[in-house]
Length: 294
Image 1 (cartoon, helix red, strand yellow):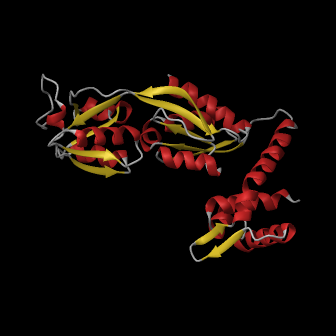
Image 2 (image 1 turned 180 degrees about the vertical axis):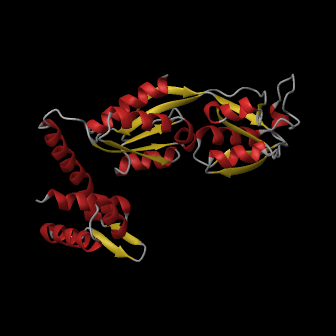
Image 3 (image 1 turned 30 degrees about the vertical axis):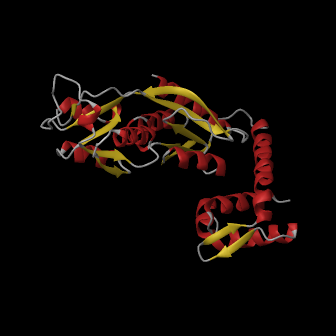
């Protein structure tokens, strides 16, 4: 069987659309269609239902997907085993919370371009759930998770911790006080938090909503910049990793608010439990562990 057909099949299964699959594979859309039809004819089953919303795996397609990934993993291992020892190369896609993408990972990508110029690193901002699904589907090679959690088919290891700080604009009533703000006081404030799926933002929102008679106003954003700028404008508070507000604290645009205490967010490097990790992804994983552990 032509492994190119299996590659096209797995990419289409992951992207859910012929146009998206063609773009990722750098093929014409008609070629993707030809590959899928050839594979279906070879196996004697329909692998996808063609719907207006995209290509949906049939039961036969879902059964084939895991086996196809195993075959492609085996082929990749064979190719890596016959490598002549040259420079590590390849494309590595990392899923990560937006706060890490914005503050901690740009430096890593720049360093990798110097140490491993043949490795093409792509960052994809996503919450925990989307990262885990990305690892399962094969869309992501590695993922960073900001929480201690276990998921089927995904293994993770600790690589660092991110200190969290509650911040506000200098003129906020809770800023610059000598005493620590209590939960009842905090539960009456306005917050600009990162979108649902951000573990520390979700934990703070739950705790605020548990306060009796508390009426916190919660606005969720998908961007650190958006949350940070709203708070710097004096509109409320936010909880963010220290690395994302260090410059604003130094310049005095933001100040810390002393609260009940927020534990550091654990940073875990995750990958699919059964899927083979290519040499380029292994190099990036080692670099991530070093970079986030410093």
